[in-house]
Image (cartoon, rainbow, N blue to C red; front, side, top):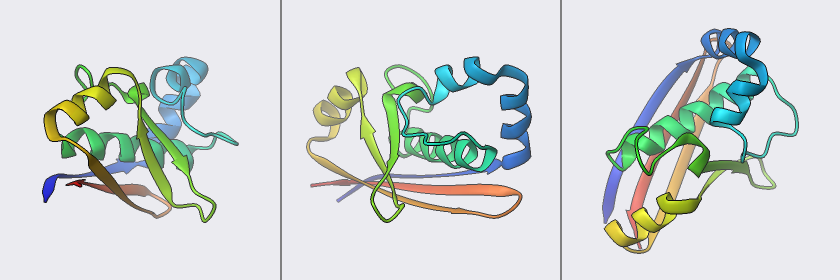
Length: 122
Protein backbone atom coordinates (compact mmCIF):
# COMPACT_ATOMS: atom_id res chain seq x y z
CA UNK A 1 0.00 0.00 0.00
CA UNK A 2 1.26 3.49 -0.86
CA UNK A 3 1.72 5.63 2.25
CA UNK A 4 2.66 8.82 0.43
CA UNK A 5 4.20 10.42 -2.61
CA UNK A 6 6.28 13.60 -2.74
CA UNK A 7 7.93 15.46 -5.59
CA UNK A 8 10.21 18.46 -5.65
CA UNK A 9 11.78 20.72 -8.26
CA UNK A 10 14.95 22.67 -7.39
CA UNK A 11 16.75 25.32 -9.42
CA UNK A 12 20.41 24.31 -9.54
CA UNK A 13 21.60 27.94 -9.77
CA UNK A 14 19.73 28.78 -6.57
CA UNK A 15 21.52 25.98 -4.71
CA UNK A 16 24.82 27.06 -6.26
CA UNK A 17 24.31 30.62 -4.98
CA UNK A 18 23.39 29.42 -1.49
CA UNK A 19 26.47 27.18 -1.38
CA UNK A 20 28.72 30.00 -2.62
CA UNK A 21 27.42 32.24 0.15
CA UNK A 22 27.30 29.81 3.11
CA UNK A 23 29.76 26.99 2.18
CA UNK A 24 30.31 24.68 5.16
CA UNK A 25 27.33 26.03 7.11
CA UNK A 26 25.05 24.99 4.23
CA UNK A 27 26.69 21.55 4.03
CA UNK A 28 26.45 20.95 7.79
CA UNK A 29 22.81 22.04 7.96
CA UNK A 30 21.54 19.90 5.07
CA UNK A 31 24.08 17.33 3.89
CA UNK A 32 26.43 16.39 6.75
CA UNK A 33 25.45 12.69 6.68
CA UNK A 34 25.16 12.33 2.91
CA UNK A 35 27.64 10.47 0.78
CA UNK A 36 29.41 13.39 -0.93
CA UNK A 37 32.54 12.27 -2.76
CA UNK A 38 32.78 15.73 -4.30
CA UNK A 39 30.73 18.83 -3.70
CA UNK A 40 29.12 20.41 -6.72
CA UNK A 41 25.90 22.31 -7.30
CA UNK A 42 24.19 19.50 -9.22
CA UNK A 43 24.80 16.94 -6.49
CA UNK A 44 23.67 19.33 -3.76
CA UNK A 45 20.53 20.28 -5.72
CA UNK A 46 19.77 16.60 -6.41
CA UNK A 47 20.14 15.65 -2.76
CA UNK A 48 18.11 18.64 -1.59
CA UNK A 49 15.28 17.75 -4.01
CA UNK A 50 15.31 14.16 -2.72
CA UNK A 51 15.13 15.30 0.91
CA UNK A 52 12.31 17.75 0.18
CA UNK A 53 10.36 15.12 -1.80
CA UNK A 54 10.75 12.67 1.09
CA UNK A 55 9.51 15.23 3.61
CA UNK A 56 6.44 15.79 1.44
CA UNK A 57 5.84 12.06 1.00
CA UNK A 58 5.27 11.60 4.73
CA UNK A 59 3.32 14.84 5.03
CA UNK A 60 5.60 16.66 7.45
CA UNK A 61 7.80 18.97 5.45
CA UNK A 62 11.00 19.95 7.27
CA UNK A 63 9.72 19.81 10.84
CA UNK A 64 10.34 17.50 13.76
CA UNK A 65 11.47 14.80 13.37
CA UNK A 66 11.91 15.25 9.60
CA UNK A 67 15.02 17.41 9.52
CA UNK A 68 17.25 17.34 6.42
CA UNK A 69 20.20 15.72 8.21
CA UNK A 70 17.95 12.88 9.39
CA UNK A 71 17.30 12.03 5.71
CA UNK A 72 20.53 10.48 4.46
CA UNK A 73 21.08 10.26 0.69
CA UNK A 74 23.61 7.84 -0.74
CA UNK A 75 24.12 6.24 -4.15
CA UNK A 76 24.21 2.51 -4.85
CA UNK A 77 26.89 0.98 -7.07
CA UNK A 78 24.94 2.00 -10.19
CA UNK A 79 24.44 5.58 -9.00
CA UNK A 80 20.78 5.20 -8.00
CA UNK A 81 19.90 7.39 -5.01
CA UNK A 82 18.96 5.56 -1.83
CA UNK A 83 17.47 7.10 1.31
CA UNK A 84 18.16 5.93 4.84
CA UNK A 85 16.80 7.57 7.96
CA UNK A 86 18.47 8.60 11.20
CA UNK A 87 17.51 9.34 14.76
CA UNK A 88 13.86 9.96 15.61
CA UNK A 89 12.81 10.07 11.96
CA UNK A 90 13.44 6.34 11.50
CA UNK A 91 11.42 5.60 14.67
CA UNK A 92 8.65 7.96 13.55
CA UNK A 93 8.27 6.22 10.19
CA UNK A 94 8.26 2.74 11.76
CA UNK A 95 5.84 3.66 14.56
CA UNK A 96 3.48 5.60 12.29
CA UNK A 97 3.40 3.38 9.22
CA UNK A 98 5.14 0.11 10.11
CA UNK A 99 7.78 -1.46 7.89
CA UNK A 100 8.21 0.64 4.73
CA UNK A 101 10.15 0.71 1.49
CA UNK A 102 11.32 4.08 0.15
CA UNK A 103 11.42 4.45 -3.63
CA UNK A 104 13.43 7.34 -5.10
CA UNK A 105 13.51 8.64 -8.65
CA UNK A 106 15.69 11.55 -9.70
CA UNK A 107 16.31 13.46 -12.90
CA UNK A 108 18.11 16.68 -13.67
CA UNK A 109 18.89 19.09 -16.48
CA UNK A 110 21.30 22.01 -16.71
CA UNK A 111 18.75 24.12 -14.84
CA UNK A 112 16.73 21.84 -12.55
CA UNK A 113 16.79 18.82 -10.28
CA UNK A 114 13.54 16.89 -9.91
CA UNK A 115 12.98 14.14 -7.36
CA UNK A 116 10.06 11.83 -6.67
CA UNK A 117 9.76 9.73 -3.52
CA UNK A 118 7.14 7.07 -2.86
CA UNK A 119 6.74 5.44 0.54
CA UNK A 120 5.29 1.95 0.33
CA UNK A 121 4.13 -0.06 3.30
CA UNK A 122 5.78 -3.49 3.31
